[in-house]
Amino acid sequence: MKTRFFLATLILMITMNACGNSNSKTKLFNGENLEGWVCVLDDKASVPTSEVYGVKEGNIHIAGNPFGYMRTDKKYSNYKLHVEWRWIGEGTNSGLFLHVQDGDKLWPNAIECQLGSGKAGDFVMLGGSKIAEVESQGKFPIKERNGDFEKPIGEWNTAEVVCEGNSIIVYINGQLQNQATSETSEGYIALQSEGGPIEFRNVYLTH
Image (tube, rainbow, N blue to C red):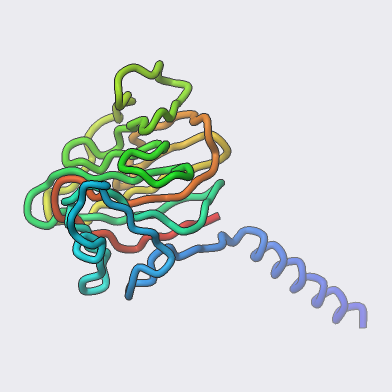
């Protein structure tokens, strides 16, 4: 009897420990459609959002023009964001918007993790947002990345962004690229349309 009780207790402890160490995963893209996303375009745009944002062969496809972004319909905090992206044709410009605040407009209050070709990992302060490491100057203050770790045009790249409290740390293809301390710790997450065709896949959070 004592042996059975000991074994049962041991199994319970192992199970609880395994559950405690597991990370919950939130898929932001289901691979089929843009459910859970809000699409935003420049006020001057004369085309519907469906011509700019869509799904092709299981990937998010963003045209790049007109400018805008697609954001989650929920706000998030304290997460690790995983995103994979590649350029279609030539490398142009795009970005990940973090801690996007309410009030959809072309340049929302948000911290951009730059994905522009040759600049992936730069931080750009949008819409009056601020980080402790940079004295805000000009329209789009920048905190530059550490090194260049992007893959050739057409190959898939990976961005991992760790947001914990006000801290933001970004890795590009597994290499530490940048870190900053934001004034905000919660907001929407967005993928930008700015320049040319780009695709995204495997967009998810772990907590």
